[in-house]
Image (cartoon, rainbow, N blue to C red; front, side):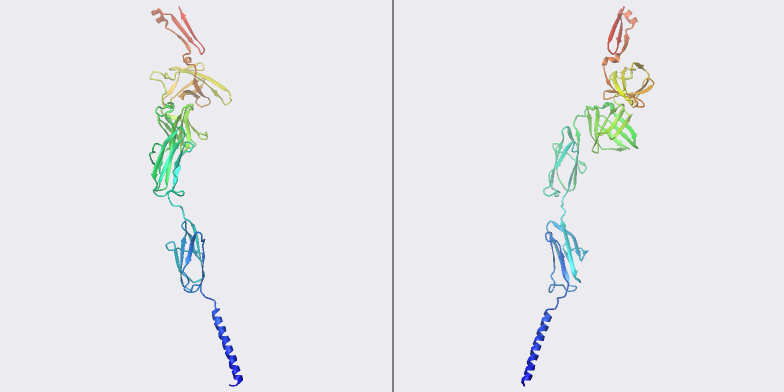
Length: 422
């Protein structure tokens, strides 16, 4: 072979070798094909994993992919989306799909809600306190956990009712109650003022009283031991019935609001503690221990002299004195014998100086008012002998028969004069 041919062969070998090397390099530099999966979640709240691709780092089209979600102990899955669309996890932990595009898996975790039972305490903190033993953990009680309730009335108060989910229960030593909790529970405690009710101090206002005001019919029934209140026929929940001696009135509580009942110029005053609710009821039945005996218009306890004042609308003060006898009245010196007694209302009515008056008794007072309430008096008992004001004398015939002196007795507001005639 000539030298030229050998040179040509050598060049061809070099070219073939270089070409082969370039082909191998090109094959190794080709991009990998398939689909990727991106995971979005907060690692401190849980973990999210996917099954690995069959080959390489990407998934082949329609390759099966399994996602596993594992919340941390105090968390649960709040949301699970695939490319922005919400999906359901199997058994709350896995999701499998056939991949056909690049895919983003987003998982949101949230704290687990605390499990257990709640306890609600209802009471008037102005009258006492109610406390409960704390849960072993957290703010809710585990099922069958023991709970102890402690009830402490304020001074001058005592427990009136104690209920658990609406059912009355007994307190141990009047202070504690222990139970195993199995459901959400409400403890309701009402208090009442202490004081014996063996004797009824409000005799004068015993009976049934009513008044329609602002389209509401107020009905109050007072017995020796209880007070019943109805609004438009619906009975109210009355608690804490208590006689306030220094105020001569009854205190009651209706749905947590304190009200007062008392004799007010022959009507029954029904007010709240702020005097924002004020109703004056009239008696429709009863009358307490009022009225005279079988023979007299007034009883022995009612006989006496009473005095008081009235502040008129023109700001002038009018004084009045009334003396009550068995069958008559002297009012400012005028003797009244034409008197009518209304047993149903426990009131006496008469006319004096051209005015119609109504008289009643309440709280140790004589309540006197005109029938239009333009004048109203609350009269207190005064000097006891004034009930006998007048002139008295013995019978001359009997004096002569028994040879006794004739005696003339004159009683005024200020003096007593005795005359003995021959």
